[in-house]
Image 1 (tube, rainbow, N blue to C red):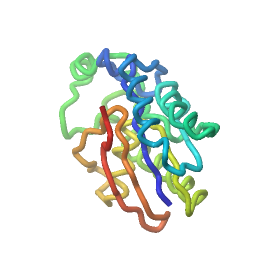
Image 2: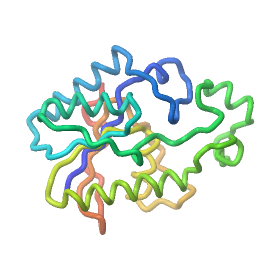
Image 3: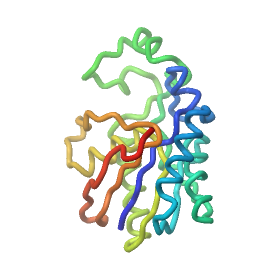
Length: 194
């Protein structure tokens, strides 16, 4: 099984520097270009299915890929971004000041209604395993979000629940994972991001 994780193209929320979480924000013109570039990069690959977060920024990124293969998108709620509770819609600076957010602290214990990293990791990894098991010998794409990809990588790399890889997942970047639900392997990170 090969799963290509695609972070959505730049969204209006990304461009404005706001915390989006489950807020639905459209792709910017640059984000639309990134989604098209991801679709072009994957156009010649034998993709069997395209899954996407139902949030419009990821869904439309998945659509740009699915259309190249005449596939219908499979909306998967567990591929949604981390829920940021009362911080959604605020800038990172506003949130840092309001809740005294510091690196290395558990922000979910400070921000009301925020989904803890451990919950996001479990949700996204269980979803990823279900998709992998469904497509044992196939190539599939999951259009999703940076937080989801980071937590999947943390689980695949067997990092402690309190740790996550210190990588930046780029808008439109392709991250490739191979294997099966017993053992996954990271093959590429941020390939073809523009």
